[in-house]
Length: 115
Image 1 (tube, rainbow, N blue to C red):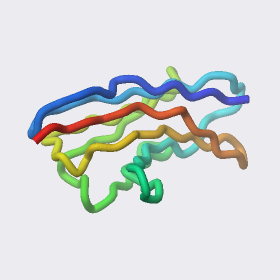
Image 2 (image 1 turned 180 degrees about the vertical axis):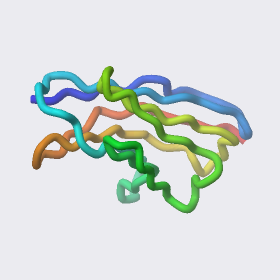
Image 3 (image 1 turned 90 degrees about the vertical axis):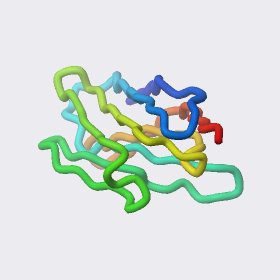
Image 4 (image 1 turned 90 degrees about the horizontal axis):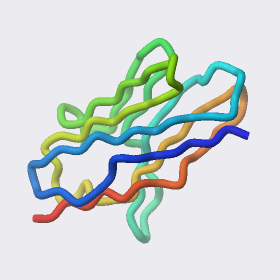
């Protein structure tokens, strides 16, 4: 069973930055696409950014130019750099990873942006 553990969330003022990390463990197989999603109460979880094993990235329009996703395959780790944070970025951020045909999720880390 693959386990994902996120870290790096917190409280930040508008315009501030955070860096989220997610470490995957428990697999002997290469990890495919990794990504970050976010969710606020009463809303569906939405994709923020994803990255393939080869480094191809995809971003939600709302975060393009402000967030950057990266990964270290040797460490089974994916990162999300969040810059110029806005109050609407407040959410629980979840890491996910695809291994073979399975999709795994972390438990989430809270990001709160104060105005």
